Structure formats: structure tokens, C-alpha cells
Length: 143
Image 1 (tube, rainbow, N blue to C red):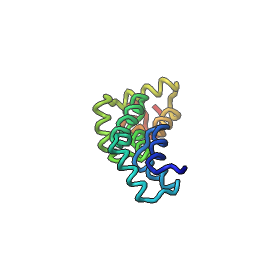
Image 2 (image 1 turned 90 degrees about the vertical axis):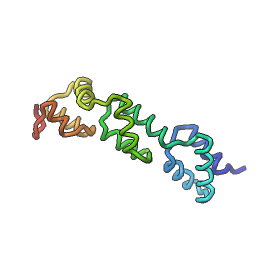
Image 3 (image 1 turned 60 degrees about the vertical axis):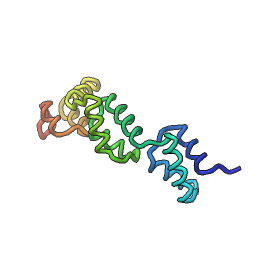
Image 4 (image 1 turned 90 degrees about the horizontal axis):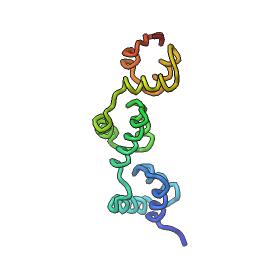
């Protein structure tokens, strides 16, 4: 017996929380009609199984607990299909006591990096030029 779009949505959400957009794409990829997909999404929201705000805040908190930069958090939220990324970032900055300079220092100590390699690493992780300058890295990447 074929599963409905709603049953499939619930099964997909059991494995891992998803954004509305990600779940919509997954259901459409399984050849459910747009109307069935939208009805399933609506029902999932009504039951509290699907909440982009909750997903965004949980993901942002996890990433900031791991001392990630705001740019990296923003990128991950966008990749996850979270809507209102700016709103989630504003909440996360306040809720998680975000301190980019301290986070950057943590990564340098953890990785044992210095000089140009350290600057490249931090830049690749989304730390701002201002943070790099505050750590003493010049335009050439050397402290």
C-alpha cells in the first residue's frame, strides 16, 4: 500500500529535523503532487512536527556552541533551507553570548596554528577581517 505525502513527511522528519523547503523538495522528489505536498506540510506544522524557527535556533545554537563564526552559521542555516536567517542570527548572538575574537582564539589554540596558515584557516571558517586584524594578522596573513 502506497504511503501518503503526510506519512512520508513524518517518516522523513523522524530521521532528522528538516526545514519546510527541504521537506517540500524531498516530497516533490518522491513524485507527490504539489497539492498533496502542501497539505502534508501544513499538517506537519499544525502538529508541531515542522518548525523552521525552532530548527534554525537549534542549529545556530549547536554551531555557536562549537565556536563557529557567524558567517559559517549563516552559511549552514542557508544550506539547511532555514528561512529568516537574519532573525535567527540576531537571536543566536544574544542567546549564545557570541564572541568572535574568543572563538577565533579557541580555534588557533586547538589547531596550533600561527602565521599565514592561521589567517587562512580563520578566513576559510568565516571569521571577519576585523577579527583577523585584532589578532594581529596583517593583509599578508602574518602576525
